[in-house]
Amino acid sequence: MLVNCNSCKKKFIVPDNAITKSGRLVQCGSCGSKWTQYPIIDNIKKEEIKVKKSSIAKKRPKKNLYSPEYLQKKHGLVIKDSNELMNKKISNKKIKNYNLGFYSYLIILIIFLFTLFGILHLTKQMIVQKYPFLEIYIDYFYEAFNIIKTSILLFIN
Image (cartoon, rainbow, N blue to C red; front, top):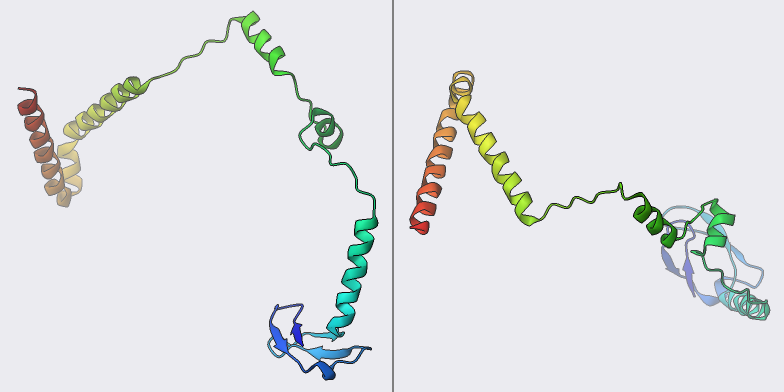
């Protein structure tokens, strides 16, 4: 017979005749927890009885968990009709929708990068004075920027 520990879920093999109908006190060899083990035949019969009782029990109709009535009753939420909200938006006409497209974001990114580049150019001497080891990296950055600039100009021409 296969016995499962209730605490650590470890499985043990026990001879069938070792566990009587009245049950036997068993201890897990892994975690040391103790419990009374009954023969599996009795467990199967108990499970069959539970299944029969549950199948005989009345089946309740399932509730729609997202219905406005259920949400109001259970959670106190009030859901307004979306048509009402749309009518309010149309009637107010104060709501303006500003969407930025891809090119707007691209222009903002370019302006941001040029601003950072300008700040770096203005503060280069102060940064090098305070952190002299960064001078090499700043020079490499300027050199890479010049290479990109010349390659773009060559590509355009």
